[in-house]
Image (cartoon, rainbow, N blue to C red):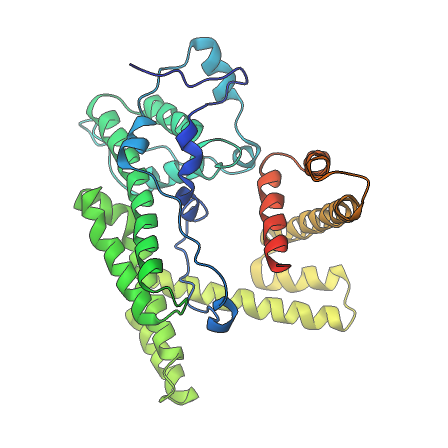
Length: 362
């Protein structure tokens, strides 16, 4: 029997949705591959307990697709009200089909999934799925729609499976140490598992660039950590690696180098007392007028965010240090002031920052 998914706020009350938190491991990588994090400090992590990914069964994920369709009234409200983080982001590109009406499996499909899943926290996973299903049905029909739905379930099952692989490695390597060989082994296991969820066509379309970038970073870290090489030899190895890598990686590395250089110049100028006009001119010279304007707007947004966080911290500290409230009252008051200072995806962000701050004080 199909299960109703809407409660009175036109939200979705599927309990297991919140359990699939492993989805968070990919929703932050919308259009660029994620850089491998190989710079962990062994000493820093030595005394921390192992944190396992939260995973669920295949049946639990499949159950999220066994939901009733929205009524016309419900759909009109739900689809017209995107989470705030999505309204501020460029929408995913339209999907491609061939002359036979079949879905062309490429990165546009994956990015559509990631676009809506990036709102996890504002939406439940079940709500994200409903939005993706709606986006698919708006563009596809027949076999193309069936393919799209199968890819969506495979995508979710695969992300959940990655969590299981990570947990397996955490159990086997519970000394909290990190090595290049362990990373390579885990990445290989992840790649080999894709055949459980995707065709070879889909696997290549979705993850070819990600794999290329991971391979590049692993080789780069291997060069950097090779103490038998001199600085000059390492530079030669880096140049050989860049020349042998796909051109898009070289272009991305060049852009990253430019950004780092400009940031260093900005820092030097500010330390000398340069004003905003000088900083803007530096950006225009290196990035162009439009990019400089975008960076100025970003600076302003960051300053406003920092100001709100500072005010929130002052008020929250007053509550936490007060002896006039019970712990339950403090929890409620903290929730209230979060609502006063933040909204939408900002609430997820500030909650995460609060957790990090609390962990660091332990």
